[in-house]
Length: 386
Image 1 (tube, rainbow, N blue to C red):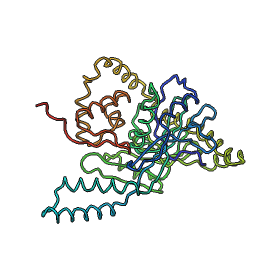
Image 2 (cartoon, helix red, strand yellow):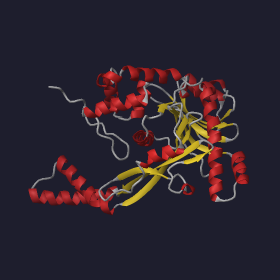
Image 3 (cartoon, rainbow, N blue to C red):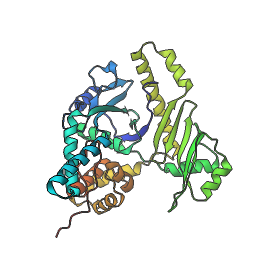
Image 4 (tube, rainbow, N blue to C red):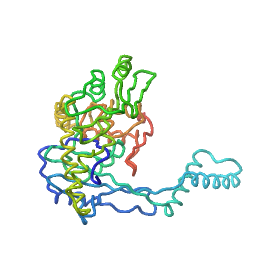
């Protein structure tokens, strides 16, 4: 099924959603895709999600929206860069009579990359986004946090106010999946398949993986009793969709089973009709799957989102004095990761507040500005005021 997502990182759309497809198209048009220039390593922007859309940046069917973010990057072989750097470094050594230092090597490498960029090959990939305003759900077809940050960041540039929040559930996925295996019992509508990962805590981080192998309840219990938790589990929902659930509530390796593919084949004639049927079928099934998955985790934990909103409103007048700034700064430095989703998960705050904290950390010189690939580099600890 061409329109079916392979992955789903799930977010909560703010309600009520009152933006029409036409308004969304207009908003996305401000950041439509443009190819990389001669001196650009990467560019990203919105493109029509299917050929049948013409120039429209949004595909709409039965109240569901489909978007596509295209990312274009330049490909330069690492070995070719290294060779050119060695050759220029050797020439410089001959001129100055001693080997170039680290700073000189860095400058040489940057110059080599700039020289190669206009001749570099281009490659493209697209990340699709599904919005279900009626259910208040949005999903991104990737399980990679940096790619999710790039998509969410682009949406934040287009939409004001930004209508997105993280989705929190009452029971953590790791705890829920461990409980299912320990009791040898899957929630209503779900069956456990043959892939799983059990990971230990502490210094050893011992990991047991099952691949295409039936899970023996007794064997699994022994691993859980030694302190391991389930961090990945293959499941099937309603005999319609199989997927792998991660400890971050991300769905990977989503696959429509025969009962759905046969239904789509009977209903379609040409490519455009097939795409529409696939998308409508996917959207309807994922809506039901996600609703059942939230219920299986004890329901949605709305109090966190409400608390985050209240905190943001209370701190609106003193944004520069956010009491979470020291904790956010320490988290970024200790983990070496600087992303909005990373701060959201660990500090349990909303997107807007996490974005403001990361902006303050950038202004303090601790992290770089966002690179074209959506990644920020951790540069150094906060400069001394002395």
